[in-house]
Image 1: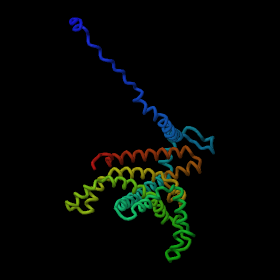
Image 2 (image 1 turned 90 degrees about the vertical axis):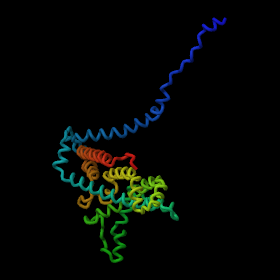
Image 3 (image 1 turned 135 degrees about the vertical axis):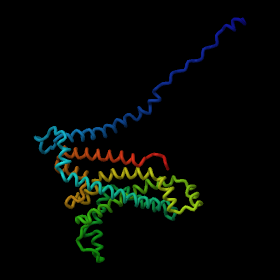
Image 4 (image 1 turned 120 degrees about the horizontal axis):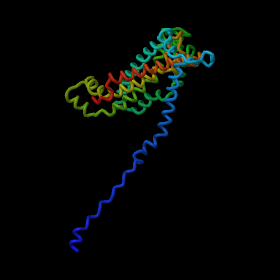
Length: 311
């Protein structure tokens, strides 16, 4: 019996069941319907714009419709001075608006980040314009700039300016008036993002800097700004794209006037498609705007070294 026991083989280890691939694929299966819907809503319009940019398409003149090749793009770059005027104004609008919004937004974020009585109410008041829709913002500022009942009327009552003055119809003041209106709504965007990042800065860094004798300005320069780098880069990029595509506020305030002084490229696209019904040429202009924004975003992120982790 002892010999038989010695010869007996040990029991084989239980076989491991092969792990099912379904649990690993389950998250992807769950998000697949939403991903397909998003792809459809994004891909179809983009492909349609690219397609119509190569066509002559005007529903009011169907006999002229057909394949145009690169004619729409050639016309934009060589025979359409309004394209260059609107593109130049768009660049000016973006630089001025984003620069001022960043400056005032950073200042507001630094203020509401301090401890003071009524800070919660102050933050709510600072951020409230961002909750107002673009059309409602435009309506508010149209009333404020109204020559009969707006700001200019009260200034004229105080002896400043003349009655009946309209800042939105004067080429010398329309740009500044539109900038102020958009600042009111755009500054809170920067303030919100920058404040969120400010609250993650360690207090120990400022305490150590104070012990070393660093002034408030040096603390801001060497601690606060480096920490806010990614937030500033991201917010300026997003806001630059939004301001470039700004249509609702300028369309409601000025309609692109007076004499085309405030017509951005997207507003020119809207007028070309909706009013002139030239959807082929409008699609070509949209494609050009898409390429410009894509190139700018890539270069900007590359030069700014966004996400480099060098805080």
